[in-house]
Length: 104
Image (cartoon, rainbow, N blue to C red; front, top):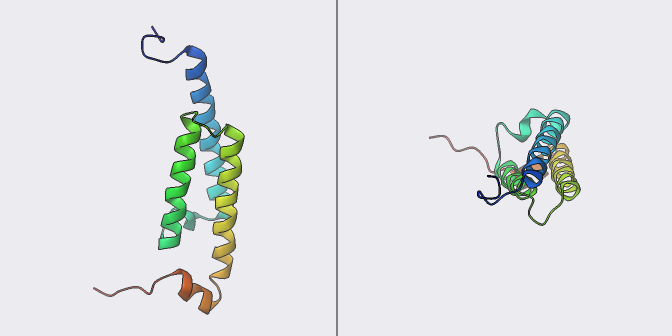
């Protein structure tokens, strides 16, 4: 029956395992970096969220990146976001990374 749907049981199991591992990694990274990574997004944070979605989607669907490649990419994205988050404490850097809020 699985072959009729275009997937084998082994491939389905790989997708399940990969999805669980990448999800757990995402939860750990969000906890380690800060809740800001998914809440109160600046344009930079939004770009990182889109990139994370692309990495997670490709990794879970077992496209070219392997699980380890996806984890490395997530680590780099979160580390970069954390580094820029630390730089945001400087007023000049914050002005470069974030647009001022607009009062409507």
